[in-house]
Image: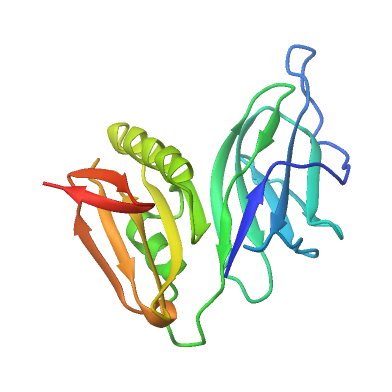
Length: 216
């Protein structure tokens, strides 16, 4: 099961303060749902400024959150939910802007078993750009957008990841694209229980029949 984070609005908070008139306050907003679109209330969202100051809220009954009155700058965002692996990313907030984090949480594996999300993070690092998290069937258009994000990230030598979860013949597993700071793209696949994790170089990734493929 995948939880998807996308744009929305809700709770208001007092600010970090101390900006000039040229640096109008900004905000970060979003919504957490499961793969069926059902809202997930009670998810904890924390934003961390570069000076270490934190602001935390939880999603409301509709899965919505919003954190207001933020100084423009770079922030770390943490999303946690019971039963899911925590996820962290970084985002640049511009003056007066609505910053949206499109991320996802995957269900954590049983104690002692490595989850896919943990293994992806081990490969890419915690600062990787989230280019998409999907539960099958994912549309070709969505995967093409994720592929564009992945290729742009690889060209910029920025770590990234895309993960697609599917069920094939009763077997639960998935695939995706990941990359580190070396600029290379890799195809990942994982098997039943999310514990069989394989990575291979993918020089020319493409999307065909709503799946990622690697052309020679």
